[in-house]
Image (cartoon, rainbow, N blue to C red):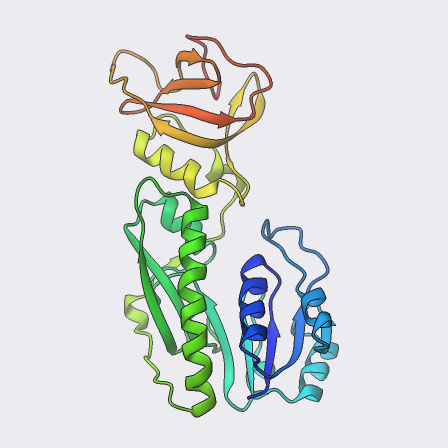
Amino acid sequence: MKILYIGSVLFSKIILERLIKLNQELVGVISKKESKFNSDFHDIVSIAKKKNIPTFYSNDINDDKTISWIKDIKPEVIYCFGWSNLIKEEILKIPTIGVVGFHPSLLPKNRGRHPLIWSKILGLKQSGTSFFFMDKGVDSGPILSQKPFSISFEETIQDLYEKMVSNALIQIEELNVELKNKTYKLKSQKNLLSTSWRKRSKIDGVIDFRMTSISICNLVRGLTKPYVGASCYYLNEEVKVWEIDIGKNKSIAMEPGKIISVTEKNIEVKTGDGSVILTKHEFKKLPKENQYLNL
């Protein structure tokens, strides 16, 4: 089964390496030289070149040069994992089997942008991983493989990323066999049950201390490394916050955002329903007790 592989993030790299280890017939790899918006960007061309797999750099997957290159290598299936642009119908029709996409949610729920991050920020208890045949819609094609994973309050986005990868590595091995032998089973998505998440903006990462302590912890843990990090403001400067815990203060006679205590580098801050402790952050100068954040 001749596979064309498209990707440009860390996840793309991991799955490509597994396909190489499985001795799959990779007839081409498409990636990007750089990305200004993917914090986990990864150029996978160097991996392919080591194995003498034909490679192609593309900034626009739907331009004439890219389409011509894809047609020349005659793939039977295209794997597109970690590519932020929609693939147009002309490419969808090239492989005889189809174009397989990946989405880290339990489709048809939570289509769209940043599904792993939103699932943590919003406090979901469960998400999952879905492989599907791409169609003209966004994450709307028939599902080939789906596997759930749980989400606990203490986990960070890195923990979820690892669960996503663990699921996908199991699924891709099974899916390769099913596609090659044409034994795969399709499950149509019910569009009436679908939900969709929007692209995050910078303001989505700003901590509003009027929120509940749980919501603030989910926000920080959902944006921590390898992503951009949540932030607050002190003396009109943006400060990144990477790690956080729930505090014990329950005083209602204190405004959200007020510094309750500063112990070494741990900063306890009043929230809408209690307090949180900022345990790893980038304050150039530590604030003092009774000062305020975000003022």
